[in-house]
Image (tube, rainbow, N blue to C red):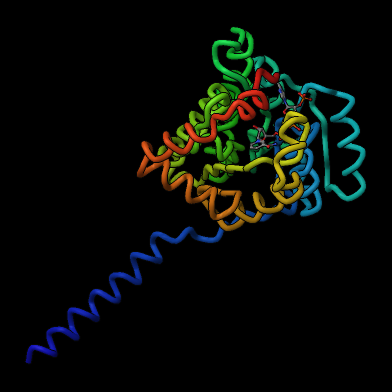
Length: 295
Ligand SMILES: NC(=O)c1ccc[n+]([C@@H]2O[C@H](COP(=O)([O-])OP(=O)(O)OC[C@H]3O[C@@H](n4cnc5c(N)ncnc54)[C@H](OP(=O)(O)O)[C@@H]3O)[C@@H](O)[C@H]2O)c1
């Protein structure tokens, strides 16, 4: 009765495989955006502004944070007609007292935080030896340290609620480090590692961490030389919509880019020396000229 044994083994393997796949699939999020409180840093322009708009259209109460108070106010006025509630809190994410004020003012007004979006970011490009100490400090504080500080300040609330989402806006650059984006790429790489570690640390608490990895997106952050030469760019609205889609699907990572981008990430992970060769070929005089110091 050999064939009977094979059928039994096949059946058990099939059922086991099915349950394993189900286990590995992310569960749909139970988050209801209507009425939920969303805090967004860097909401005065670009992706943050688009996220504020997309969350507001879904009925969320939105807290806008950023340094430029007048721009925050214009975003507030733009989304106010359809937002359930929206408030602008001028914030410098590199200043700890400012982050504390952001959390306490949000809690005073709404009593909870359902989604925290660490989006504020700055980009400096150019060879490392041409950077100033301030370029390094500002990038690390804004892109990396601020996300950890703000998350740490908001976490007691999220843990007490036994629910919450933390969205960290990283970059493809955090997985595919390229020359002349050394500081920016390192901060985004760190942010991705922070997300991955914290997601595991928070397993079973009801709080979930999501990394978003945009590619070039048409915003103020992008230097004019890149805007003029890179043909394919996403819009901030597209990034915002896909981010919310990923949030509702409970994804761990929301990736942007083409099949080529995914291939580069895969090569980076498994064949870093091939990527060394790739970047040696990319480092033409035109490439270096295009990415000389920008801040
Ligand atoms: N655009 C791209 O190609 C691209 C690609 C991958 C990832 N990203 C990431 O996406 C995020 C959003 O960038 P974006 O493209 O939308 O560029 P953006 O339009 O320049 O937005 C950056 C935002 O960060 C805020 N910010 C900078 N420093 C801050 C500080 N110290 N305190 C508070 N807010 C601060 C700015 O607001 P204030 O100046 O008003 O403070 C601004 O609202 C960044 O993390 C960026 O790294 C962008």
